[in-house]
Amino acid sequence: MSQFVDLVRIAVASGDGGNGIVAWRREKYVDMGGPFGGTGGRGGSVYLKATHDLSTLLDFRYKKEFKAQPGERGGPKKQNGKAGQDLIIKVPVGTLVRDADTEDLIADLTVDGQEVMVAEGGRGGRGNADLVSARNRAPYFCEPGEQGIERNLELELKLLADVGILGLPNAGKSTLLSVMTAARPKIADYPFSTLKPNLGVVKKPNGDGFVMADVPGLVEGASQGVGLGHEFLRHLERTRLLVHLADISDENLEQNIATIGKELHAYSEKLEQLPQVLVLNKADILGEQASEDLADNLFDRLPQLLPESQKVIDVLLISCATTYGITELQNLLSEELSRLPKEQSTHELVEDLRATLHPDEGFMVARKNKKFYVEGKRLERMVAVTNLRSPEALRHLFDVMRAMGALDALRAEGIKPGDTVVIGATEFAFGEEML
Image 1 (tube, rainbow, N blue to C red):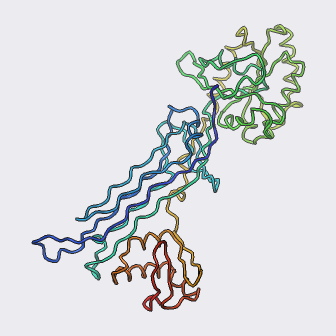
Image 2: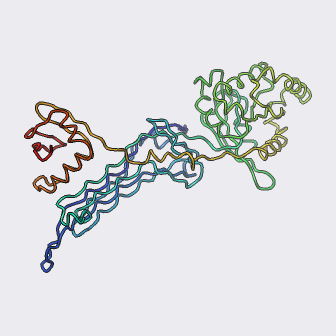
Image 3: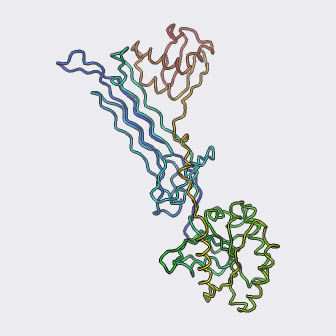
């Protein structure tokens, strides 16, 4: 059995920038060659790209973690490190991208080929050749690469359709879709036969057309998670027009119509305010005259059956079995869609640029067993590329710690000259020059 997956969580991480290096130009006939260390390469960024080649998010059920390549460290002879390769993750057209931790909407991918950056790669650290200044012509230090970004994302797929068909189980939604379009959904003679949304294109004589979608049948309590339909109500929010399909031969016809209206009202204000066409299926069972009389009476009673906020444009009789009324329904839907504005993509306005930027890298200071521990990824990476035997490199490290406020934090914890400082895997003595 095929699966339809429309809501997943994944973790993405951009690549770390490569470290710079300390190197010197040492050629036989070049006096005082000077600093020659290259800069590290930029880490790869992570992008999401919409494509029509995918129709579900099923692949993300089996792979949930994605990481771009890191940048390479710099080389001698001013050789810059190679940049990490960007990672492009393909998702179906119609995917909403949210930050799973903050619930902020990042992008609405509604166009084939549309891309959005969700994690920017870290910048490469400068080698000593790029750190030369008027005050320091021969730096004995370099910079670590910037760390990549780790994010948890929520991907939600919403089908892109002009018309959504909804109704109780066994009302004939999938059959109607198959009659009006070339779609061939699986249809069975029992309730809940539809296990995933289906799409089809209704062709008009002029060659144009519109997209229809049917979703699993709703039952009472669907808006609170009862039955199958609740999982797919979100797809209807993208449509511009609803076909409310009901079985005219059902003895509980009015109650069934009221149930669907109540569930739309409970689910969302946007959904219930979409214009509706009430379509009464299986008119062949009651006969044409009896069906028309029932439809006329029903139209007058709609204000009592549906919430005031729900607008029913018209009531039509059809029979999917005999195709009675199908042409009239198609013409009505085409006419109404021509009056309604098209779904507006918000991806250009919604993208949260703050989410792709590198956060400020802080630190923590703790005193344990007469040692002072400084924890912070930026400082740990800084120490990893510092030559602790070089007084100049140490001064540069202390300048960075001073600018970040780490030295003030150590003094606040009561550190004294000679005490041991631990940063990452490195230990050194706190000296007078750090006060």
